[in-house]
View 1 (cartoon, one colour):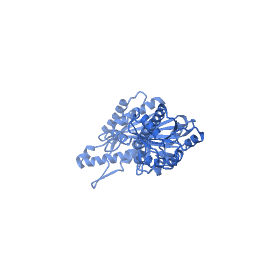
View 2 (cartoon, helix red, strand yellow):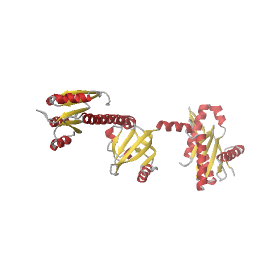
View 3 (cartoon, one colour):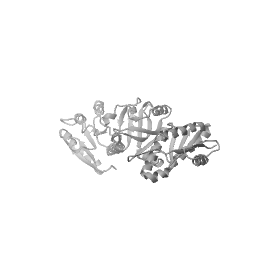
View 4 (cartoon, one colour):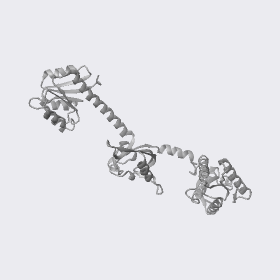
Length: 414
């Protein structure tokens, strides 16, 4: 049984054939529009825009071949499928019909089973095509995707992608995908992608994509595309915008005042360094710093001024260490710095550098300018028997020694 609301225009100069076709198909939820005048048929087809046209080849005045030619020249009608209904066995007629794009033909005299089977096939095909088109439309509207050739030139981009980036489609098509990709100078992301795709059929990872005014983070799958001869012809990119997710994750691991990593994150990173040190025999050190007499700052100038001191102190710490060193706010006025690949002697140099830099910092807030307070330091180096709790305990004890020895000191746990 056919899906309801299908419409077929039948063009035949034989009234008998029109009635036979209507009788055979009329009980299958199909609307049959009959036309015995081939010269009027084109206007009827334009008006009705049917799902299928059944067309006789041999008709007076305007043949079925001529009518099909006119349909194929009309943009609106060019994609409507046509099945010829004919008694002709002349190969030249059938070949010409196929050349013009007819999808099939039905022999006269009409056999009910053949008529129903062939009409049914193409109506189902049309329905599946429409479903597939709706599916493609949904992908185009809601999925961030694009397709490139083997040289990474963009051949297709979804409407969802253009909407997310605020770039017009014409701006993206024809450009290299690398023009849309944001990489830090020290990253080798694109090289990693290309290397992976030479060895495997899929690359997965997080990338940053340019927008008109900024960028967004995308969880991305890049997959090879092959033709029917198994030749590589391009790549498909499917992306999921995870910017909001990453922002929430970043908020969860950052101290809101100083924007440094919080205690939860630094403990995770310390555990990572322990595992790396155990596996590869690496070293690292910890440095704990406490601002001296911080309560006095809050009591004298207020908590807002105290917050400004914490922010300036944090800036000084970050400016005093390497890029690979990780500065965190341990809590209150205490800070913890993870120093990868660093012996205790080198960590001592870092502590002295921070101490010297702090002496040059002034805090200016609401026209109150005060030199930065001194700080007490404790440091320790990782040894194979240490776990994270023991390391924190050691560096805390070293800091306690500095405090008890008059503050503004550096102490090493040994």
